[in-house]
Image (cartoon, rainbow, N blue to C red; front, side, top):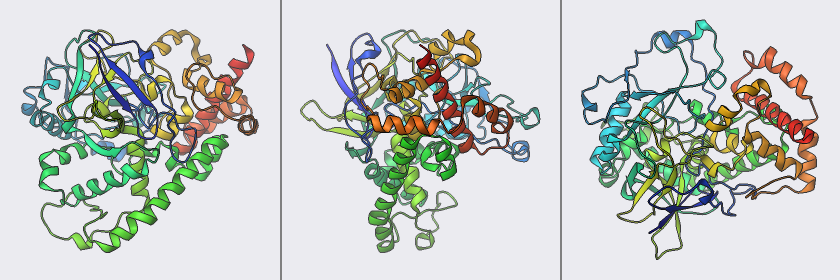
Length: 500
């Protein structure tokens, strides 16, 4: 007996997920033709199930690292029933977007924020998850981590790590890895092509949380504990998206199509801000106010809090595009809803993940991640962002990272060395050459392909690689380095495809 739940990111691809006793094959994902406003190219709703975002975390200064509290973590256990007894550590930012996690075992996150999150799950009908999964830290492969010298290492944690969801015990194929009641999800309304609409709702609720103005119902729902683990405004997570690139970095991508879409998206956010946010904030001292000191603990200073600016709405829009899933409503409804689903939206991206998302946006329903293969204790629980069919042009815009290859893809290409080209770049190259295959939704016009290829000819692959070696690793800002890395990857994929 099969019950479908349709998960899709807002404005993007709608995944039809079939719930069976055993997880169905990954080709059960069926992208829709919906688009991201205002570009006709937007196919996967922003994180169709959490986009995999290769985040370029800024390297912290040595002084800040020395002052950082030592982080306490533990090996995966059989469950987190006794998590409250663990000594809390300094919390680390939770990232909805990240690189493909390492195949190595991770460690359980028992930071103060993580412990509060576990308690939040327990109090709202999701305690059973803590017997199977928790939040974890996974080592990043050296090639994926931020560049750093030995002198830049954190004294307590030399290796860069990635936060995600970790298996606390062996989970057989077909069994649930994650089960979240629909009532725990943050429903941002019906699906449509404009992510700034749900971003308005999210920003208003988030501002209320920062200013201690949430309703009793919202507090009872657990929004404070959930909002506490979202990537903060202007954190490294969101700065990896082209929406926050400088104009110079956008141009350095040598991708006029990506640059034009990004600028249109920024214009949409600004128009929404000027039309809906600024006027409402001026009329009410309780709307769209930002407490720069974090949550207020009772001091009624509402009128003194500043009004949010356009960057706050741009950040909220990025949260929507990178974390929200679009889920079909009840069986008797054709509507789909944009949901933020706790824990599910903390799974990292792996293009080769066989795990399946299923459920419906309906009272009493459970939103699940089903194991598509046997999962071992200590392994990351990852999902395929964008249905596993998106290229790095979309990943960089929507999630803020570059997909360096799925777990199986990287394993199979381990012997290729520097010649290895991730599929996420091949997808872009095939699009530029008019050789899309499979379920490609967004096909470029001949004129757009010509413009895109001409822009890439401004420099040669050899020149770009030399620039990366001499300047990219140390002297470039993160957005400029990501732009250079992107165009190098696309040119290598084009070279490979044209040679074949």
